[in-house]
Image (cartoon, rainbow, N blue to C red; front, top):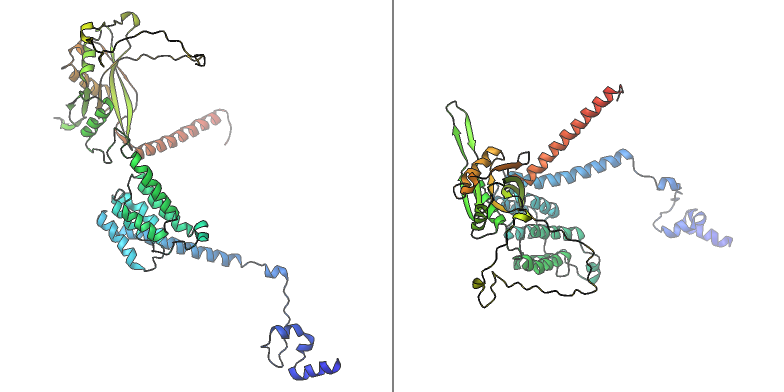
Length: 442
């Protein structure tokens, strides 16, 4: 045993092999005459974190990098918008980004910025622009190669961005075409979330495309008179109704130099409403009520009604139909009345009561640029040309207070925010007065 140790010391030339045999076996590159150092460190030192100031610098650096990358994408659109916000300038920005880097680094942030800027450039309803945005994605990079990648949502961030592009197309009612499908297959593959979203859109859009019998156009008329004509035609839903423009919007300068503006007055009345108004009892008044809101997508307009109270039961007269008008066959306009006492089933539930609310007849409708009584009185005077009975019937105005001009969603939100701020100020003032009256300090 002693001889073996002596030979080992002689061949290695160092004492490390005898004292640290495990270190010598693990590190064969250790040269002659070098004694390995025994390094001892506590568990606390191994688990220690970097300095807090250094960590904060790293976070600020990363945040600055991200913010710079996002700002550059927004700057591309802002620079293009200096000349004019059009489809050509928007496509120029997309081409600039595609030529900037072959790898398309930062394409997800760029696509989100492009989707946000589309309404400003007026291309939110253009399918060719959406296809060009999808073309920004690198091709055949995010396609899953096996069932495991397919199962674990291969590249989820990019797939979610592709779904957002299709969802914006869905919100604006844009139908994808064959080019959209080819791009999605090249980018994400046939078994991906954007491809499933495309299949759902292609299944449901044709079913709901022509479902509404009274569609609203994408671009509403900008002229208030044309908008009032379209709105009143939509409310009346009568092909025989006649629209009359009683007054066009204009401005007039008086001799004193004051500028007076005359609002527009547009009304509608059908022949049936005219005949009902002719039979109205002159002793009973008619009422001008309103304004009532009508939403056309994101635009809200208001209209007014000329109506009467329901006729009392004692004054109602039932008109008997002439049997000669019926003829031998049953007519759709004068159906035969058959009174049969049918026994109801024992399972029918008659415990609830239904109250039939009887409303008065509506004689006419109108839309105006101002909601004051003087403007509506001009409408009533214009109706007297075709309805002379209005000169004998008393007219009562029952109008709601407040401005009821044409508004949009953004204007209403801004007004509601200001009213809420004013309400909080008034509550604070009242609270201070109450505390001051009680001698309390805040």
